Length: 119
Image 1 (tube, rainbow, N blue to C red):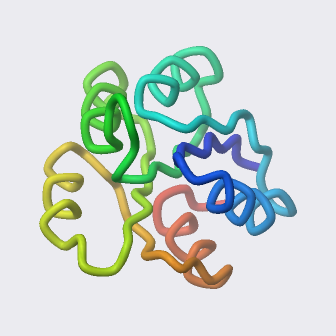
Image 2 (image 1 turned 60 degrees about the horizontal axis):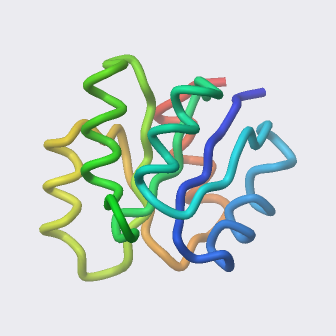
């Protein structure tokens, strides 16, 4: 069972991701901005971060870059809205290992995780 950190500024999206993931994964934290994501990553050292791209204070791209710089082995899946292709390209350059598109469906979320963190 993988340890997962959820980073999304929307409480609704955090709840949705938790519902999808909690059956098969251990949720080690839920945060609402990139600064908290980096801090919580360093404390909890999860197997995977589900990272929203657009968040206040520090966005998901900057947070991913910082996490990957401190730990190149970190696994980060970006959560993006339809129409954010340019942001996705930036996220991949920052080191994102995969992405899922909102609105989430459980099969696509689980498939993205399986591609990044094989069970």
